Image 1 (tube, rainbow, N blue to C red):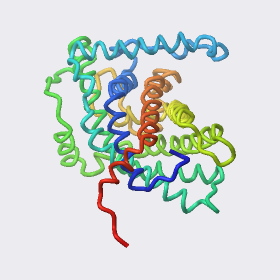
Image 2 (spheres, one colour):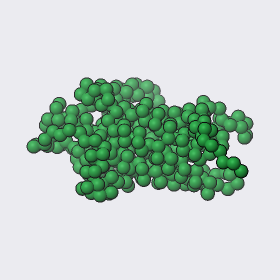
Image 3 (cartoon, rainbow, N blue to C red):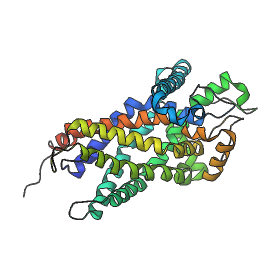
Image 4 (spheres, rainbow, N blue to C red):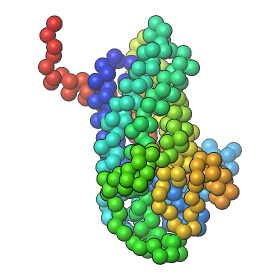
Length: 337
């Protein structure tokens, strides 16, 4: 992807197709991540790994055990989801992502290309300029990402609230009447009617704090890892090098910004149990999480997030390698000179 010259329309098509395939494949893990991040002390419906019990010097030796434990917590969430909501319960909110992931990827890729082009000198970019280009791409994409995440989180977390109502009635506010889970369109109309366009952009600041650093880390890290595997000074990197570079850069960036992702998820969640905290902003959210749950709460969903992001970028590499966008464009009539 980084080595061969690809036209912008082909990049947009490749990015959109990769996003659609990726979301379909990893959405259940993303649902588990959202629900694990949202559950608080006193309302734990799903088992999870207590990160505060891990000793950093021994992480190298016990990483495999930790991964197995975390996969158990994810499977516990998904098993309970299937039991209470059926198989398609794992795909609550997927329609929102499938609808908006293509314009999101299009904006991100186009913005990154635009900034890289204007920041480059003789076709070369310094590390700082690569980071600036990533910063610009991350800033532009939140136009679509924020409302997409806002709607997706409500739909994903609705099942957790419903399960709490049945299994943990003490966590549900007194007098709460059980209602049918709304659709994405119903949520959109409700937010626009009650709060205007700002309702869809709740958590915009936290989304910026997550996506801008993610892009700053991902794009330069991918480019430099990919360059390590090039054949000679100017030769392209083999496909498997680009694939592994995309997975490593994506998962590294995802884990690095996970604390902000926890904050964003909490801020954007509209429905809560009676024992769960509410937050007035980023600072208030950080203080309450630190006081009531400890610093380990900021790592909730980190493995799930890495398991979501790594395949997404791996799938993107496959789509780019196969040249799907170029294949589709080849059927369009070409302009005659």
